[in-house]
Image 1 (cartoon, rainbow, N blue to C red):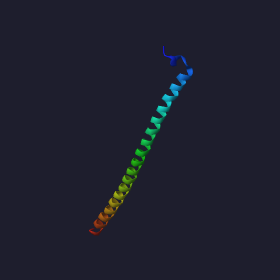
Image 2 (cartoon, one colour):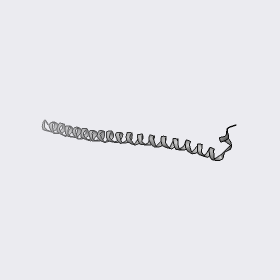
Image 3 (tube, helix red, strand yellow):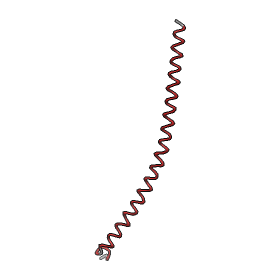
Image 4 (cartoon, rainbow, N blue to C red):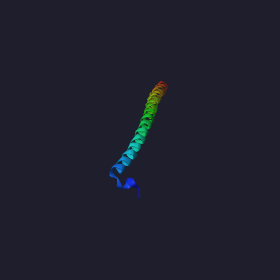
Length: 73
């Protein structure tokens, strides 16, 4: 029989070590998510800028088309 199985302090120490490992892994995963989120946020911000620019260009083209159509009437 394992001596650690009968010793509550040894079991507690083993559990604390396991929890410490899990906590470290969780912290590392959180850091990676933060980096990834930052990259995604930058990409989304750029996409939003490009979408706004495209919408402005489409509105300008539409206005020019309407103006030309009005001139030909």
